[in-house]
Length: 444
Image (cartoon, rainbow, N blue to C red; front, side):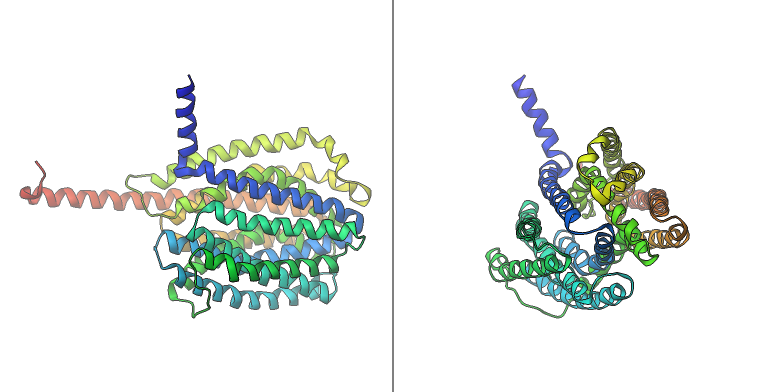
């Protein structure tokens, strides 16, 4: 019996090319991040009103898609260039860091300009948050991916866990001294991130074999970065644009309540994000040897993730009376928003995996086009539904855009998998024909 259990555990642990171990590490990271976010929210409730919290959340919603250009693009390109193309690590570092700084500066200008126009925070507060996220934090993210490329996925997670600890320390420390405010928090973030970044560049990266220096980005780096940056920015615009749109249409109080409810719902989406993050790089190699390879892989993982999403959404709904202990004061109305956002949890399980499957099929451009079209649908729905409805309009628009993305992603992977299968069958047929015409080449 003990031997059977051991073998069963070994099969589960080794499934999807070691996905279980990486999922565990990803789970530790996301759980720590969510707990830090909830901890921060509880303290910020006592320091900010819904309008101020909504403005802060709206600024981060603006920074999120721009940050995808700054860190997600170069960071994920690091993994693709190492795993799929097996490029030299130091060449990857030179290109990725240079791109991060250049895109970060451009994104910072855009974010600051839009935030000054639409977000009700001071210019100094906006500058501090933008610099901490689009410059310092983005470069830390890319450094973490460089560590993953040189060492392992768990090593990358450990780099990111320090960032979560720094965020928690900043909020808790400022609250303990009675000086928690948007300005002080943003200044602490920038200071802590900058010091940690200096250590990563001076000590951590050289310790795993890197020679830290900047250089002209290669054409491969530009292409790989664009492959990930554009769809990630579009995806984050779809996910977080509603909070920014609420501020644009002067629903800053709604944005604060909506953001507070979103924090709770993010707990339910935690298992899904964990699995998708850990499985991402397993779709990158073009290693299909049979028909339907990427379609089957995406279908199996999506079915599992959808089941997890339904269970977690139902669990949060059943446990909704406990929200009385989380929301208080001016944020009590956020409890009424949580049930509506629960529909979002199983929906996000339906699109991420097939979209990653498109990468394995070599359809990066088509994948980016789907994300861009989904973002366009989101913006249209925000413009139509939010002005007259506030947060209910944001909920409807977000769910509608997720339904569109799920449908489009499965249509795309079904279509392009069929094309790939036809090419595979044609290649096999040509090989058989060649053997038939040259009997001496056959193996007896």
